[in-house]
Every structure is written in C-alpha cells, then in structure tokens.
Amino acid sequence: MSQDRHIALPATDAVALDWALRMADPARADWDAFTDWLEADPAHAERYDRMAATLLDAEDALAAHPELLDAPTPLPVEETPRRRPMRWIGGAIAAALVATVGVTVWPERAQPYAVETAAGETRSVPLPDGSTILLAGNSRVELDHADPRRAVMARGEALFRVRHDADHPFAVQAGSLALVDLGTVFDVRLGQARTRVAVAEGAVMVDPEGAALRLDAGQAVVATRDRLEREGVTPADVGGWREGRMAYDGVPLSDVAEDVSRFLPQPIGVAPAIAGRPFRGTIDLEAVRRDPRLLGPLMDVTVRRGAAGWMLEPRG
Image: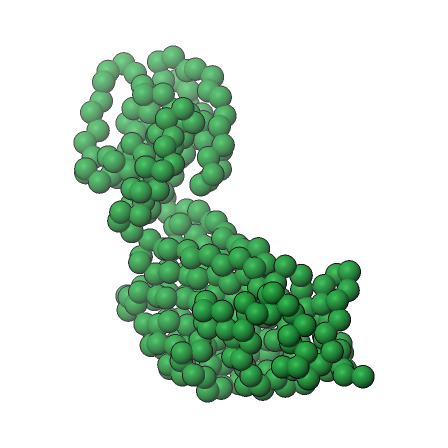
C-alpha cells in the first residue's frame, strides 16, 4: 500500500481476528488451543465467525481490485474445516484486507453447518448461546453460525437444553413442524411417519403460526401429516435414551423399532402384520444392544436375524 494504516480493534475482536488468520494457515493452526479458546466463552465463536467472514469478503473484494495491493502475489489454496476454501493471507496482505474493508461493518450471511451421528453413537453439541443439543444415534441436526438460535432436525432424535431468551427465542424446524422454545428441555423425534415432541422442563410452542399449541412439562405432541395429537408423558422419561432406556405407552411397534435401531449396529424391521401393534413397556438399550433377541419376550414377537439386520415377526 502507498502508506501504512493502523486499524484499532477492541481487544476481543483483535484476538478473534488473530485466530481467523492463524487457523487459515496450516503451518500456524493449533486446533487444541483454538478449541480451548472457543470453549472459554460462548461469545468467542460468534466473534471468530464474524472476523473470518470479514476476511473472506475482503479477499473477494481484493480479487476484484488487485490494484489495491502494492505487489499482488499468487496465493495457494488451503481447505479450512469451518467454511469454504480460504487462501492463506500473509501479514502485509492481511493488513490491506482489513484496511480496505474495515472490521466494524460486515454483512450477516449464512454460515450453515451440520452435526450428525452414526448408529449407536451419541454426541453433545454446545451452542454459542449456552444451549446444548444432545444427538441420539443416526441423527442429524443442521445449524448456522450466523443464526445460533435456530436448528433444523433433519433426521433422528435430539434432546434440546435451551437457554431461554424472550427477545431471541430458540426455533426448531422438525420436518414440517415448527417449534419455539419458551424456556425448555425438550426432546424431538423425527420419524418416517410421525414427529414427536416431549417436554421435560419449561414449555414449547408448537406450530406458532398455525395451531399455536403450547406444551408444558409432562406433555407431548405427536404430529402426523394432517393432525396434532397431545399426550401425557413422565418428565423423567423424556430423553431417557441418554441413560440407556426408552419408555413407551401405546406406541406402534414400527416406531419403536425405528427408535431402537438408532442405537444398534444393524437396524430392526417389523413385519407389516404387526407394525401397527401398540407397545407398552421400557426397553433397556444396553441389553438389547448385546442381544436384540431380548425384544422377543418383551414384545411378544419372534425376532429373526437376516442379512440386512433384525426382523420382528408374529409368533408362530
């Protein structure tokens, strides 16, 4: 540049900018230290993402106007796990980027990412606002760094522990069902035929733009294609899969098999003749993981093993 320019940043933003620059360079990236910094304060992730987005926007601007740099230099491309490919930015070029675009104004743009689990795996997903999502096996949730108060359940089951904020409510989209947190611990199960939401603490507003159905602790709703059906639940049973148990009160065997399959190496199918049979009881997931045939006497069915997994059939 024709002259040096000094950019004064708040201390927290300066640290976030330094991390954005360091993590873009494979030679300087320190994932352990970076993770420690992110976890030290929920606000760090948002500041980091804003600084990274600022540098990406500045890079695009300079690509369109290379004359802004004294000596443009071809830059190698490096992948960063958190966002689209970003080229390493040397010290002088970094200063030019920040000076050109500025660090106090940047567009709020989508920064989507997804977290998913394999069958038999569970995972805790901490969010920048202090909320937590606990994913069951074979599940997927879609999130956005630019909008941390929104989640999309794409598959499976998750327990949400939401930090309530009346000015910025937490929203969940589960299939066609919209949910808004009212200060809550709640479980969302997205099945092939039915979506079930059960509340352990606080309250959830279901379909706020339509039915506006409020669920309080100890209540659940089952959503099918054309209706919502309210049910009662035991709050301690909500998200019971975290402790290795799943309780049911009149749930079709097809739904139970779908749930249990998330925690097994091989899936469980149900013969059409008994798929709609209601099941009442509690399943010990660890015991069934060791031997799925234990479901036989519990459900009064025959459990057969096939090439693709297990099958529940009527007793002969």
